[in-house]
Image 1 (cartoon, rainbow, N blue to C red):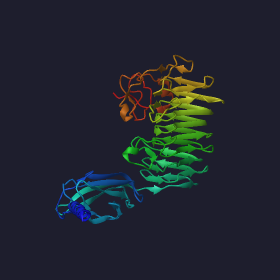
Image 2 (tube, rainbow, N blue to C red; image 1 turned 180 degrees about the vertical axis):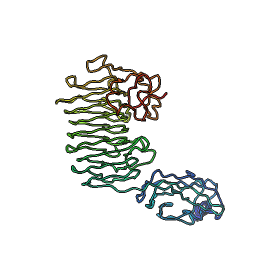
Image 3 (cartoon, one colour; image 1 turned 135 degrees about the horizontal axis):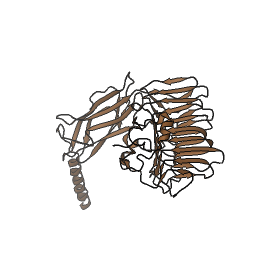
Image 4 (cartoon, helix red, strand yellow; image 1 turned 90 degrees about the horizontal axis):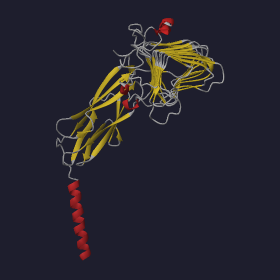
Length: 443
């Protein structure tokens, strides 16, 4: 008898507790809390599924409530939802206990159009009174898929965008021309393989942009998102002008090709090297290379290399960087290297590594080095802070007080007309002397 009474009492207590917890109030109009008031998708490629974002909805009303409905304001099949674990763009009668939360996951898949578009929708949540909403925004870019082998001369028109999931190649008998304002996005472990010729024709106002497919802000400076541009031994007569190449394994690598020009480029956040050259004839000028896991420029084998008015700056801090910013130390063949009017700086004590037996000259350069003097160094300044302006924003322009100001050799500016202006189009002859680096100082 006593046992039966005890069981009855426990049952009543449990039932009462459950009744309290299950007391759901309907049509309360209770206000819910949201993890954001606007869910923003970064750049979304039309016809491609975006990354997944989420909204957390929390009941801080102090009572157990029923959510009458959750739905999209405009269900045009461009936003796909998962509501509380169910793949659907709408849901009804969701019980939400006080202090509890649910998640709504969202993925964008914008439709192809004739032009880029700004997309807006809203998530509507109703508990019985006025609707609450979270705005959903995205900017869609119309992209064309570009994969496989290009076998004939091809032009990518100005201001167009391309996405490559598998990478693409240019045949040895073909030339690929990329016009100003073109944007190319690459999937992981793919890139551009050039056996023929590549002509990138960007401008200061509309550079050609090459990067990985992840456009979210948190991926903006993550290296190794794609392979980069690889020039093979049959490639010839290629020019890269005004290109921004970001977040690669190695931005540009070339081996045994005839001629390559890299001009007015920004190469940044590359896991291995910015530029890796082996047995080529290469001209590089007005170019900024920074944040590389090995070297900004590495040279091997024979060939002729002119590096003029460049800024090579490497403060890599993701892991240990083994090599110097400028590395030309493994040559066993005839090599001719001329580095002029350039800045070589980084977070190591010595940022130039070269074979003293090679034909290499540094002239009028500001160099981070543990050398005190060397016959290879002509009118160079050693181990002095270049005083970059706005280093945190990777601007790498010079302050007026920088020791690189007015230290460039004007003779080279007169000799090569393409050095008459810097990366930003500023004249190098507008004051007493030109400055070292890819850009004149800020005055």
